[in-house]
Structure formats: structure tokens, C-alpha cells
Length: 394
Image (cartoon, rainbow, N blue to C red; front, side, top):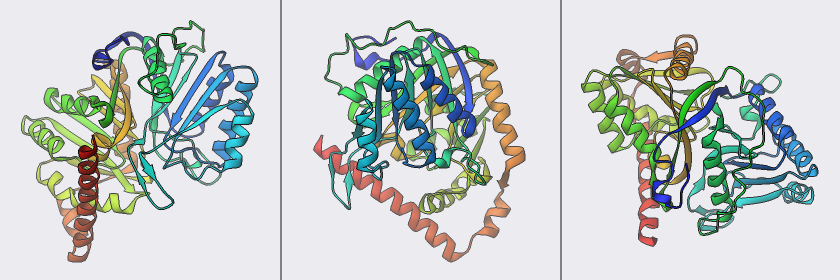
């Protein structure tokens, strides 16, 4: 539970929770709207991307209806990723009683943006039920006519951990220096029963370099150091840094099988080329690579030894590790982990193609490898310049 010492927040699991995995797509947004419609006191919705498209307008109407019922609605979107939201749309939200705010950078202009980004995706209703994952508010994550949703997941959770999530949303909204002793995060309002849910221990994990939080990175390292048999990672932009690669290599050397599901099609060509540059290292260290073929892969989820799971907004790369505000939930429950593992295995067997050493060698040539190297170095150098600058400013 949250206490007065921020350095100790969420260092351990809370026991009294029920959880359910929710795939992205129409079902996710139907559930999101249902939770909004049943809210009685407070809604916190914080996302990286909020698009002013059909999906964004649908959720906005649900939030406006909640505000009309005197529900206090707080909507925060990242100031960079959601900068295309029009002033008229924001005016409609605020005129309807929604408290709207951009998560602002340190500096910005028409052609630049410097500062951390709010990459987490979370909604908390009445401090009693929440969804955390990688799903933004956009048509890309919804099933639209002729366009199926990108592959992504969220966790629906109810129980003790939702009070901590509520407090975290208040801190992000108001600032970390505000007084939270009166934050309305202990209101015992009954909500919908979670069907097909598991009782599980859950802990909040955060990465935020300004707040010196590296909890999600530590969760992945914990997987690598404690795994006994197998780790499956599904990640949209898999570019592990030096520390993570070292721990992955050590896990494999102990006999742990590491399977990585990555995007076959990507919305970011530079990231995909950089990722392919690392295939040589992954294959050389006996890490299995599977490319998802059906659509864009955007999910971020991992399971260890059929025992525990981490899910949220965190990609296994240095941007998530050191530059963005990220939020994951760790779930310690064998039955839930086994279900997640089966889902990932089904994705691997039915929707993926394996990248073997022979196949990878055939896909390479001098020109392709050059562009992959350039993409990787561009990603690496840009990131290190960014972090060096802000470490000097701290």
C-alpha cells in the first residue's frame, strides 16, 4: 500500500486483488466505455496518445456523459504524442466539465520537444477498478471496418492496488509536491464483478528518471536472474540496452529458454531496422525470435516460468528504461501466468514466423545491413545525447 515515504511505494505486492487480461480491440473499448458509464465519483484517464478520431470522440462522449452526472473526470494526454488534438476539441471537453491537461515537456516549440514523455496508459474509476496496459485512445487500437486493431493488451484489476493507482494518478495530475492526504482514493464504491478473473498478488512498477524510478527495468532483470526454465517477451520495440543484454545472456547460459515476439510489420521503420540489427546478437546467443505477421504489434508483456507476469507500457529499450514515464503491473499468480503463456504460445504458433540463423543470413545484404546499422546508431546516439543533456541539467 502507498505510504508517506515515496521511496518505499509499491516495493511489494498487495494481496487482495482480482485480475483479468484484456486484449486490445473492440472488446477493450466496450469495456472502457462500460466502466466510464458506471463511474459514480471519479475517473482518471492518462494516456500517451489521444487521437481526435472515431474512437477518441466515442470515449470523449462517454466522459462527457459522466461529467454531466457530476462525476469528476480528469483526462491527461502527453503533450508531444497528443499535440494534434484541436483547440475546439479541448474546449468541448472543458466546457462539458472535464478537467483536461497536457503532460508538458521541459521545452517545446513548433519543431522540437525536449523532456520526458508520459508513456503510461491507465484508467482508474472510483479508486476501485482500473485498467493498465499499452493501449492508447485511437482507431489504431480499435477494430474498425476493414482494419483490425493493433495487437496489444491491458490488465483489468480490482482490489487494494487500485487505491495506489489512484494516488499515482493524482500525483501525476497535481504534481509530486502536493498534499495527497485528502486525495479521494479510499472511497468504497462497488463496481462490476470481474468475470473470468483470478485472485492475485499485484504490484505497481514504474520507470521515471526524474523520480529516480527504475522498477520495471528491475522486474525484467529479476526475470532474467531468477528464471529457471523459460521467459517469453512480447515487445513492440525490442532494443535491449547493455545491462539488459548482459542479463539475458546470463539467463540463457543457465539453460533458460528466452523467446522474443517482435513486430514483423512496424509503425516505426527506424526502430524496426535498428531491431533487426540486433538479430545477429540475439541469434548468436540462442535467443528465439518470432515476428508477428498479422498486423502491427504494439503490446508489452512478459511471462516467467509460468509463474508471474509483467504488463504495461514499458518497451525493452533504453527510451522506456531511462527517458519516459512508464507504468507496469506485475502479477504473481501461477494460474494467470499460465493463461498468459498459452495466449503467447498461440500467437507464436498461429501468427508468427520464426527468424532462424539461416533465414536471417538470407535476408541480409550490404545495403540492408548498412541501413540497419545506421538506424541502430541513430537510435543509440540520439538517446545518449538526450539523456546526457538532461543529466547535466539535474
